Image (cartoon, rainbow over all chains, first blue to last red; front, side, top):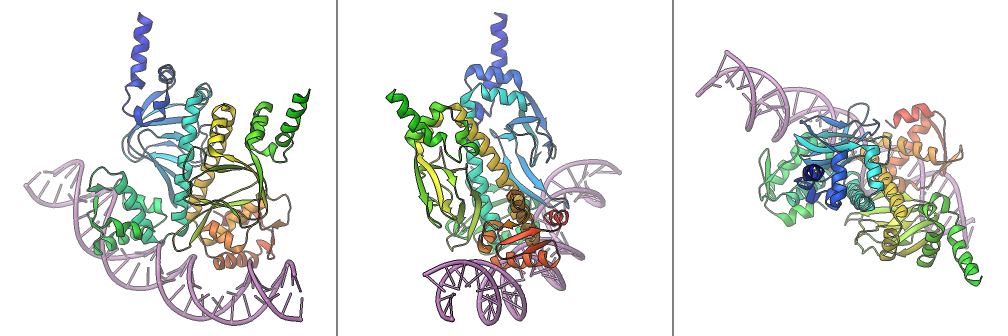
Amino acid sequence: MQLAAAQSTLSSRCMGCAARSRSLCSNFSPEAAREFDRLARPITLARGETLVWEDDDTLLVGFVVSGVLKLTASLADGREQILGLAGMGDVVGRPFGTRSSYSVTALGQTRLCVLGRPAFEQFAATHPEVEHALLLRALDELDRARRWMLLLGRKSAGERVASLLVEFAERSPEDNVAFPLTRQQMGDLLGLSLETVSRELSKLKARGLITLSVKHFRVEDEACLRQRAA
Amino acid sequence: MQLAAAQSTLSSRCMGCAARSRSLCSNFSPEAAREFDRLARPITLARGETLVWEDDDTLLVGFVVSGVLKLTASLADGREQILGLAGMGDVVGRPFGTRSSYSVTALGQTRLCVLGRPAFEQFAATHPEVEHALLLRALDELDRARRWMLLLGRKSAGERVASLLVEFAERSPEDNVAFPLTRQQMGDLLGLSLETVSRELSKLKARGLITLSVKHFRVEDEACLRQRAA
DNA sequence: CGCTGATTTGACGGTATTCAAGGTAGGTGG
DNA sequence: CCACCTACCTTGAATACCGTCAAATCAGCG
């Protein structure tokens, strides 16, 4: 009875997790969830804290429960490129690899479940459904990264900013969309300077395609905005 | 005995494949190899032929036996970005997805083994070691794509060209490295115009970091070239 | 040899960056 | 409550970088 009670308590942590439905964890069987509970521990990062450093050994794998993190690569002189964002349900870290090619940093307060990379790898190896789900996510991320390569390599500043606004608008439940990033961060994501981002936003506002405040925008002419996104 | 002979004949196609050692296929058990033989058929593409079109339904998965293909995304007005190259042992197509976000085109004569996407997915589902190998490849490609995002978003033309030469030199067995791409294709890969690529190559030549002919180059000062690649 | 496609080089112009100044908003402490 | 501070944002001016257009050269091939 005590064992059963303990298991119940243990499993409730993962089974009851807010992120579970959107996460890789949704593919866990109840027994896998209990095992995961035993291996993982919850942590909280404050804004600006870094979970993984570029070129470091990858000791951890993390599952995002709440908050948003940025994946960034940078050059010796400080130029930085945001490679992607990770939110609730996403996996960060580099399973099956020894070295991270990017940093993972919290954009705001962030909660994750983390476990050691070897522990996760062994867990995955014994749960093919987890590896399958991980594969689907990796292929999805790969498509996303490649679409972004087209933007970075071939789109003009105006097209890049319009593309980003379309993405933000699509993800937002609100009609009045909150910017999840600062102008600097948008520049780092789009491969532009923060001044250029600001100028292009002002242009879109001047042409009536959006209404704009510092922290929010609203799409006024979606068809035209999408067209400008190319 | 006839059965054994038939199996031997069947398995010899895959087992004896030149690409097998470098390929996902190296993870096939003998029985998996025989099943794969039954499902896949060999095809040959001429230079410029396209196996998969951007935005098409993804009906095929292909295993490259010889030759090189480019993965490209493009905009309505014809601007094109090369997202990556696929060579011997690489997998092209989009398993577990219904739509390709890029085209796959042969850069020269190319041989592949192709099979229907549903057939491959079922094959993978029944062979966890294949899915695992596919996962490792996908994670590797994802790292590669993300490193390229840093180049496209933040490096100058000179840095981009130097980076590309370093990659070519690393992959080449020869000391005298053959360009595997035209100037136009290098531009499409680097997010530059072909003229800018040519000018940056001439600059590197003028500064004595490389010797250069139209179809070959040789690195004369590797340390300095790597430094310029940032 | 002459054709074709690729490459090189020059001149010019446009786009995005850099540098700089001023403005705004939110938070803190007097 | 207000002044101040900090971080972020906007806008302007000058500059640098890269793209476009154009012409000349080169390499391979029938």
